Length: 126
Image 1: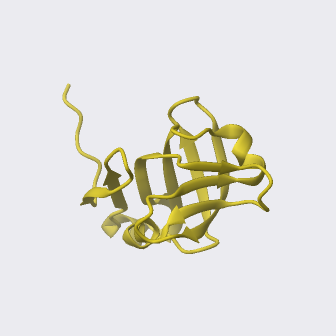
Image 2: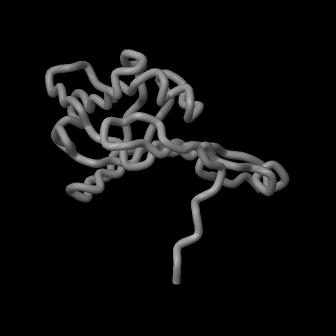
């Protein structure tokens, strides 16, 4: 059996730009892409914490160190500058691989600078 698991997550990044007239995609600071192991042109799921929108597009490289999160093309209707979003990727794997899998979880500050990298989501207090 193949399972689909969370591969990586950019947690609560801030949208820095929206470009309706752009061909499409989401431009993400190269340092964030590399830290999360997200490939250019890889499908990403975006969950907009600010307005509740959920949508899919693909990642392209943005300027390294810029903190860029630019939602482009038709997806620009679903986000605005300063919105807080979660960007996720998923991977299919066999059960044995899934048992060993740890996602790459990237946590940022308000300027999209990496502050913590983890392999598991912290437990919530009851």
